[in-house]
Length: 462
Image 1 (cartoon, rainbow, N blue to C red):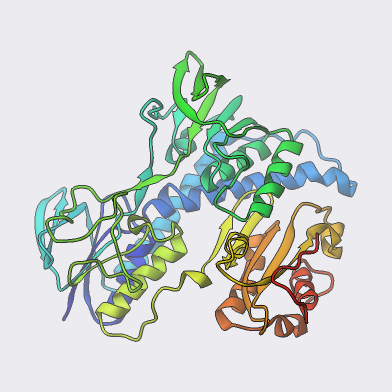
Image 2 (image 1 turned 90 degrees about the vertical axis):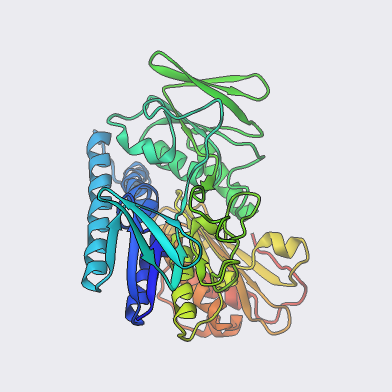
């Protein structure tokens, strides 16, 4: 029987463990905090649970436009965060039960490579050397810290510490306007908190579709959020019951709490990687190919420690691909062009495949249509006006190669376009499939109809 040892129990690790066991491997998984890793315990599951609560408040506040007047609704953040952590622990327990049911051995502790054919696990009971025919490293990443804004867990916080708050901040300063910063800013603003978002770029979400970022910035500003654009935080310090954030241009911003969300660094230290001949990028990420192999024979890596695409779904797929490849099953290399992603702001921003930046840079020849959400009948009924649907296709064949949806529940709507991209269907095939009337998905089919027979590289309806 093939011995498989996995270091890290996040999506990349536990999904790999399940595949390894399914294919007959003798699987041992070493995890120091609990199954599910950061994705379940401190990042994805907790943050999206918080956001789901914030979405309820957004709906209540928007109900007046529909003729429904609600008053006296308050937020008990202590109870909200209790529920957040309860759900995270419950999800972790479910994963643990599933793995044990598949015969996977779980060790509570840390692991480090002893060459390429063994892992040394450090557990509360001591060290154990685990012989390995296959090793998978899936150790994830942690919040990056600013040298002069070290988190204290009370007033100066990283995103893993936000769930310790018992009452709503009076004024929350969010440093960083990437996905994590934008999501927390959106959620706390919806919960009624005065939010100041410090953005080093000209608009929020610089790594996303520029049209989507512009819509979100307009929504944030029109709803009363303060955005400091082209501003870079340099330091944060406590002042009694508050904090002061100092910007690089000398300005200061005062608040009750500050969330520092300026990216993540990989957990690749003290793993014995260099000694095992595993190549690392200058950023510290493990270098892998499209089947998750590292530069050392028999050693694979998956998830945020690789820097490929910081999504739980990608980590899980990297882990599965690693086991399929290592254990001789049929496997296709990871194709990032088919990955769908979602930003859980209000409205949500979902993307798949080729994006506007690639088209504008002429890296890809494409035609495109963008339809505003406000023209959709179902959106009008629900009082929705902010957002759009954008579809990209190849100029000659009409094959769909990408899309963007900005709308409530965009993460659900993008699946249609993800299937289209993965299956290489044309805009005509998309348009000819029936949609419910009225529905938000009707705008996706309408985009297909608008792209029928169009010439030129880019056509946009706004």
